[in-house]
Image (cartoon, rainbow, N blue to C red; front, top):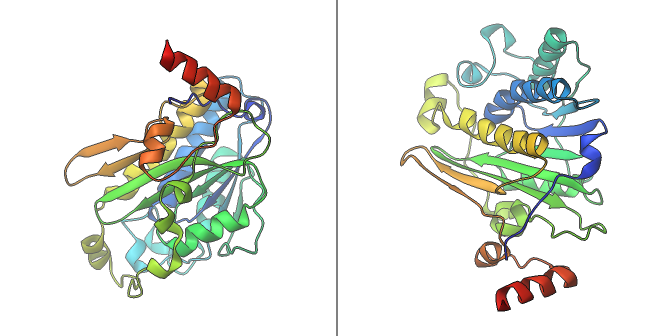
Length: 269
């Protein structure tokens, strides 16, 4: 059954609280795009735009220069603080940096949470920290030449619409911490980092997140709920807004009775 997803109405009239977890390759590329979105939303009539909080406890290393959005003089400083301070100085905003790692025991109260982490432990922590809040959760993860972006909803709430499944609904293995690689050590040089991962993949994933959010706020709805990207083959595949597609991926959506009845009548006709 095809699903129509419209934006949560309060996000069109109230300040939109966004939490970004991870200021590495994808996170550092995404933050300037979120500022573009903030500016565009206000120009198009949104009363407040975005209020972003960036979480990351990592500091800039020499291996980050050139591949991530940092400069040689940044080495040794907190990534989250650097990015947020620069954007605030340029745009006059009051976005916030939290130079710490998100844990399950933390509490993130946001309208949209964007996870720019590649570890299963990191994803599990984000879901745990947002437990109890009805919000969007966008996962942006990648490997050497491939990546996925999935937008879903955390917490059922009392909405009558079909809930968008998040990354852990569709891919439970992605939050199974036992499957995390045990030997994924940080790169010691830019060259080593580039051998491990495409120079382009993080910017690509950041753009996919950017496009999902642009569609959501510009059109008030989504045309798909995620995308798989393979830079080596040049192929990208969207995740359709369709309960049958989700079921083939292993997730059975809870369909409100009236919607299920309407779908049955339409199929019979």
